Image (tube, rainbow, N blue to C red; front, side, top):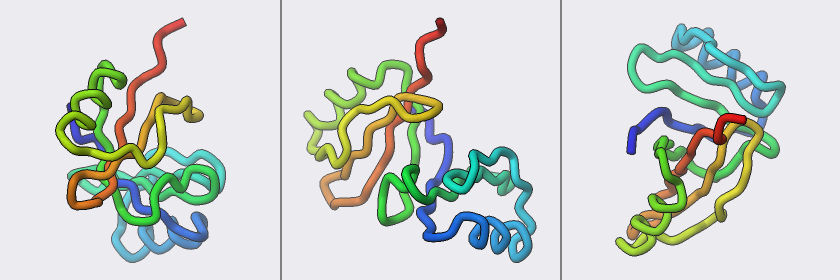
Length: 114
């Protein structure tokens, strides 16, 4: 599992993106409408999410895995709870879990090449 970014849910993506760009000086790497914006922070990328991409109500780490079904099985066997089951997002497979302390985390996996 590779920690790939931190997701920060926001109510208004354009306003939040302007804040992180102007106040912190982060460079925008990618935007998908008014629902997702990825920033280069110099360390761990920061993704702002709104609307249908607001997967959690609190900031959550995102882990990229090769086999998302195996990772889900391993994490739930270790005590994680599924908050949002495996689904196809606009760019990847994803699932939202909570660790034993109820902290959210997101698993993602690339779609299989076609």
